[in-house]
Image (cartoon, rainbow, N blue to C red; front, side, top):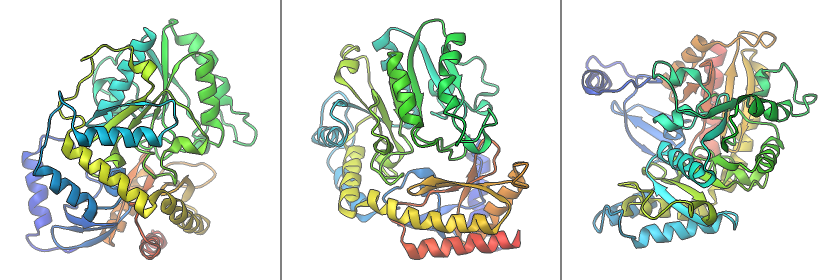
Length: 431
């Protein structure tokens, strides 16, 4: 990164500190200026390969010409109305419903992932006339108060007082750090088998729903073993619960399938969408069953900017791009290539305790040694900063702050994967 005496980066970072009423945790001291595809340029002209997708948002790549053109055209026609349908909103609703299993036949649009989760919670509670929701350790569903109450990461809730009543938590299969000290080959899905005990000991008999992520993003890109999600779904159905699948991060081709539910043929009652849905345009949605949505009366759901024609036009363009460029299939193929390279790095460097993922989403967990698995958040931060300074835009996350996020836009080419892995390899050799 250039060290100009009075760099634009320093200027803008100082402005952010002075004027922004935020608690942003800058992964690295960089001010983005523009981006295209899987590449980024900062305000000082430095170039980066993107492994963040703008926090798993820009699945079709930054500033895709077709997406930009769709937004531009719509901006000259109509920007917003909620009380009246628009061709863009209705067309998007039809296309989304057509892409889901036949029982999911209704969609409601919102603006953010947190809003979509909040709506899903409200629908489940109204439909069942119960108020408890089962969530999971390490789960993250948003930062507004309802979704935050379902988050299984304590530090997200610290200092905000009591959460909403009715949240019950169960262990998620973080197999690398199993809370039961088991190994996947001999645990017999203990984390599913304990669900009855957990609910029976905590519930007041008012359990309405279960909410789960196909993989946990904020907790450190934690992926459950094959078969786990189907077992959880079956358990929820035996309990007559509304099964909510939070696909805000995992959808739109990220895992090599359009929807992560396709990997195990899941049939949730409610699916939440966001992030890649607009590929940078702020839009989210819940997809559900008519019989469930019918529990609400007309006018009981609303969102001032939800489903506005500008964002719907963008989301329609995203669907077209994904279909034309076969981005889900591309993510599966490119992801397998990237995965092979990441596992070679694991074999080479002892500080890599675990590499996990599918499609184009991977977590690299750094540890002091593989026997103790002691997390190394400080070293992880150092690796991230060195990568950014070397032209690889990457971030860290995880319960312990020791997991590198690897999630490039789905359009990334093999050549950029080679270059980006070479950068990481060089940094690790220096560390």
